[in-house]
Image 1 (cartoon, rainbow, N blue to C red):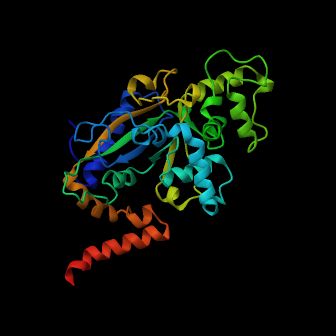
Image 2: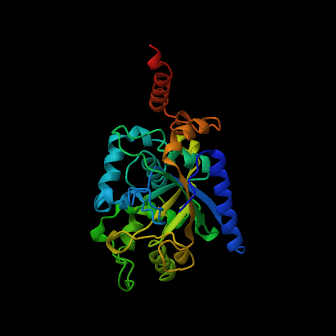
Image 3: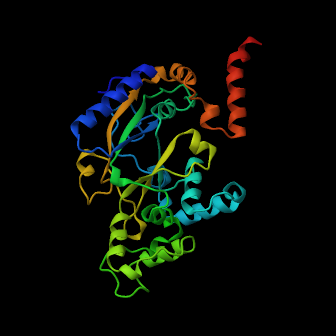
Length: 325
């Protein structure tokens, strides 16, 4: 059972311990980087059980049943109804990153480079139970990404995964041998067609079949990338993303982020693993939120858009002065 942390000092100490142990265990993994993900409770068991290593992207969350089947509709409706919000985004990767940060189910998973920022989310970001039910412990996941799994936001595999929303499941087939002609490539040419609208040079016909085979393999895994910081929210949250691929027919893959799969080239989470998780005591969440404010981790910085800033100011001052009359 993890030792519950109750303040910033506890969290920093525990994060340091876990990372140092991981480095000592694999001294040759010099290119690895460490990132953090805060969750207000154990969403798998919804109790205070020890948290596991599996955390699906929003698109594959159990609460979003079969959202991957209408992924294109989700993307198109978000874009159609909020076109002004996306006017500065030049690529599918940038648009999906923005949609993910505004709660649309996507195949991106949020992580942060800042452990204290992730701890803020582990407290519930100020969202506590108001129904009298038991507040549960929060969790700060620590994720190790091997150097070869960290890609540029312009890399072929990140661009390819970003365009998956535009391909219907019935037209995306990865099983079976590669087709003999460029006109039909087991679904990859359907994806390539969508990508070439944005990047005309994207393709693999001149290097067939190796490039197509590499893409078929890589698109069934999870990759990490650091996004363009073109959104105040992404910038303030020190955000990075895991880009989650898919299987045949766009069916969900199931990355475990386990130690065993970290070294298995055939596993969806090859090169990415959870090395530990810091437990944050439920009763310490509110005082921890106040302590984090001293480190610049607060709602108006985490959510810097005007409506969120105004809401945070109103709620904070109401709490300070409301009962005084």
